[in-house]
Amino acid sequence: MTQDRATAGRKTAKAPEERIRARNEAAILKAAVNLFAQKGFDGTRIAEIAKASKLPKANVYYYFETKEAIYATLIERLLAGWDIALEHIRADREPREAIADYIAAKLDYSRQNAVESRFFANEMLRGGGFLSRTQRRHIQEVTRERVEVVDNWIREGKLRKVDPKHFFIMLWASTQFYADSAEVAAITLERPALRRTDYTDARETIVEVILRGCLP
Amino acid sequence: MTQDRATAGRKTAKAPEERIRARNEAAILKAAVNLFAQKGFDGTRIAEIAKASKLPKANVYYYFETKEAIYATLIERLLAGWDIALEHIRADREPREAIADYIAAKLDYSRQNAVESRFFANEMLRGGGFLSRTQRRHIQEVTRERVEVVDNWIREGKLRKVDPKHFFIMLWASTQFYADSAEVAAITLERPALRRTDYTDARETIVEVILRGCLP
DNA sequence: GTCTATAGGAGGATAGAC
DNA sequence: GTCTATCCTCCTATAGAC
Image 1: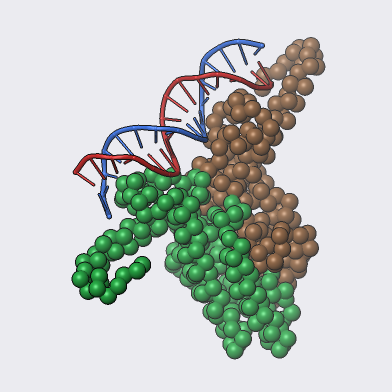
Image 2 (image 1 turned 180 degrees about the horizontal axis):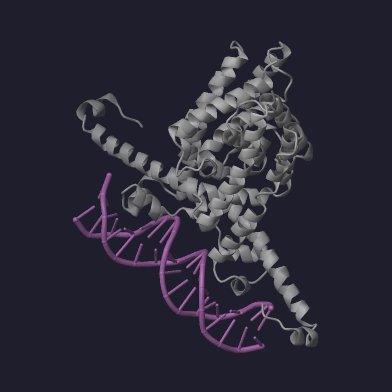
């Protein structure tokens, strides 16, 4: 943290140590998010995290004080990415394109970050007890902003009169389902696992139905 | 199981014993489904189930051999109720009413059986490893049947050309979200918990957008 | 059918050698 | 920074008195 020029100059060797730390922490978090997503906080064993990240159990404790610390780090990290997809919903855009882009972005996220999405879903099933008040408020504020954009579109006659919050929930639900309930989707589509084309089919269907359903 | 007339006649006192068993098993299952929904199979402790069902831990073992047995019973029971909402989707009905009724029924289920829904969601996050091949096939068959109905509607020009499976997933996702992600819905709607009116608002929004989105 | 007591093992976390 | 050995708690499951 406090690293003055002298030390920095003397020891260029400081970098490799930090690289080890970075690599190991990343391995732990990657293993942990996957296990937490599947089995939740109480269901996940530190030994499993250690095994999956190919580190001895004691090393996991070296990098993270407790299981809670790992979990909290993941929650924090997840929320940083929360807002990204919503950024398509901007007042200066036409609803048709903005909504279509949002759906596409959210489905891409479901495909590429399925594990993170499931981790969050699991935390929600738990009741969201690990979410701090600040984090809840953050979600609300981000949502409120975008709800206003939708409200404006409606006022300008660019969108049919729909409840903006429930409308957002519809978008969320329809797109996140392909991550959180990928298993159900796979069973329904009669596949061993979802394919890339399933996501594009999903996008077409959702965009079509939603746009036709909400445009004037 | 084998209970001849003689025994039945001699002992009317057999009923109360069975009533105790029925009551206790029900208490255990009710407590268990709630805990499994929140913390999953590995995260749930038998002691918690015992405490929540107000029975000594050993009694839980008296009624169910293992934790697996409780879980399997719940899965079985859940699947029996799986098909109910889908029954609105019948070939002899007009799509407009059938789909609106389906959405309403599914949202009612989300409100009244939120715990069961979450239990299933948790099992899906786990990867659905407790679902037997037969159970998976059952889901597929039921879905396939209803997909055919939708396909027919499309052929008859009563419904716009949409991918029936992804269309179903949209309905499922949008309605189940209010059970599985009730926490997210509550945060979005800025409520401590979902109210009855939230479900009717949801119904209106979903029915409106979906019907307009899929009717010709 | 109810419950206490406990076996036997696993889990979270730590000490301390290397 | 790495890892073995270990503490102590808590868990599933069972034995056996009432």
